[in-house]
Length: 145
Ligand code: ZN
Image (tube, rainbow, N blue to C red; front, side, top):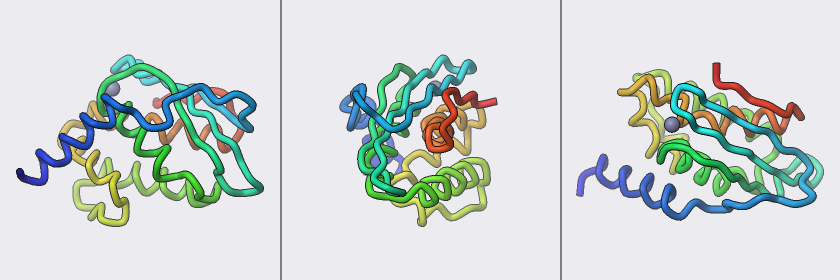
């Protein structure tokens, strides 16, 4: 199995069995993200303990890339500080839009960097992250444009 196939497997797995896929009652912040180009729509919920993301979940509907990205995000950002989450969002967006960036600092998120070859799918991959940033900044709506 080559790397591309392995990445594909991870995406399909997270799409089929998304992690932390649930509405969060009594959350501290939430935001709605919408990518009209593809039709991806999701809601991100989070609970903070001081400056740390204690709990993170999402619900929504969209393509495999958008769901896998949201699912991986809920795994990776748990326990991170608000500043760290915003940094990850910027780093991921940068890596997803620049062919020359080595994505090794992104850990598991590297599986999504295949979208660099398909610019129209970049918004699918980054939607959850923009939505998380919006929730952290206490806005209610994130648009990918
Ligand atoms: Zn999509």
